[in-house]
Image (cartoon, rainbow, N blue to C red; front, side, top):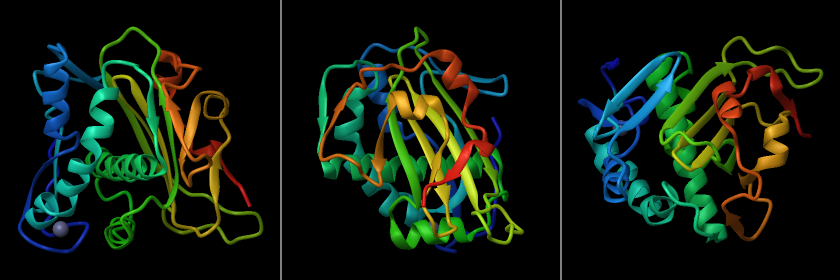
Length: 243
Ligand SMILES: [Zn+2]
């Protein structure tokens, strides 16, 4: 497993920088408590197998780890833990949707930091640290395949709105990750206008959590997501201007 170091916290600039789990330890405990014995997280042929999802990254300080990031995990756990391995009906309130969306956006940023360290300018992390809410779109779906595992696929890119000057650095990232049954798609965009994903799977099998487009979400989604869709991730060039 690769562990990336940097001298100062990419969120707040603080020191020292500690090891942080990309997927929280409560998630590993919840999976064990529900009978999962092995966790596999894979991308690009890399597979992690253990009794714990031990994907870690060293880019955040202790103050962030044990402060706002831990608080976000505490808020998310009661909503997300029951969804991991079963698909009993769960009604997500507006507040639940906002919490899940913020958690998914944070997790997508942390995955970016792990997979492609330095590929996103620091202002991405600084902006999220200040605002603590998704900047872009967050979508939730339901995995319907047979694998008991998680998958992730993240990449940075650029998006140029019609008539605008092309950016000189990444202004967009897209992430799709599954944690067993829940599947998240995150489109991060700092360019100001609204962007979305021009992807059939998004229209057919995901709810948009942020910006929210319904008062309550009844999970699982009636149209479940297959392995091919998970493995394909989201091509950056499928991003489109929604204005
Ligand atoms: Zn920090």
